[in-house]
Length: 488
Image (cartoon, rainbow, N blue to C red; front, side, top):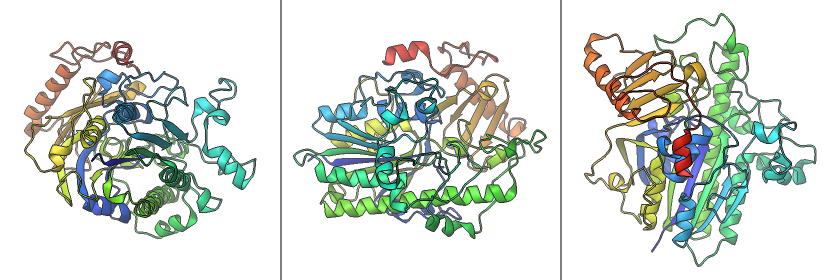
């Protein structure tokens, strides 16, 4: 019997923000229970930690080398042949996405039978002087018409005055909680349970925009954290200690020293959004019980990337540090259809590209040759299976364009435009407080990681490596032209 499959993805959630991981503040009771009914992967990474490339990996199972997206660039067509929903549809599944897709064109089904879409505020959909009617948010979005029918025709995503990338400011949601986009995703997902084809197993992608900014939790959830004892962000000995240009005063900054009360309120709102999502997941799990599908559904929960939230005086994503690149990852099987080792954790280093082969394996479907990821089912069953030694990640970011390579125990970072290097011992220093590049005790490790990255980048079109040495200053790209052409 093929199981139903539920993929729950959130946007910009740090990998450490689960109470089952003993986070000092965040409460996630429903996600904790999902972890108890399955396996928690503690070393899950987003190889290219921003929305578009991460979702390409999620939908295609490809590494960034092959899906071709190595930075953030909107309006690049998505024409991949083998996608997770397409292959599942070919294997008899009724496929549905509710929420964020962030593809191009916006109404591209990417293999789903149907998409009920809310991507949040995307600049290229909103800029009236640079857009076509067909790609305008008024034509693409499904949440906004729904909201305006209930709250008034003038309602918009800008009503709170919060920018979609404002990781340093927050305020509570101003309308009834039932109208929040997080609730909307679950409302529409429950409606899919009502109207799905009962003759087929289903694949539902339930894709939340939050906890990505704007930080706008309903007041009840914000109240849970406003008076909490929230630890200050960690700051490594390598971080910039000064902010002479006052970058931290910019509400959408990616670095700097933010006024203390402003930052603390943003932290509280971010954690509140996570608990809000958790409660809404609980609402959906109850609906699954009522519809009789809870015990024959495999559930995978993850995020596309994290949020630095002030760590090392940094904000947002796209950088290789744990707050940005590490993601939560739970594979849950309430009915034990896959014979997983319940209530266990796994330490192997995994990546978002592993989602597609894992869920295809669970469905009993063949995995296309284009897929670079690996099925996690052997690991989740406690089997002694061969596994990758490390993953390579990267992100274009002008002077901060970076590459990282990690096995979950150590992490090497190379900034391609400047040649700056960092080496962190994640076992001894999980918060990346101490850069070991100049530590003689880590000289052998440094040389080994540097050599591995040189080999990894040897064939790249940017010219980052000759196979033996890394080459500084090669212009970074957001899209790999050769790889992207081959993939699509």
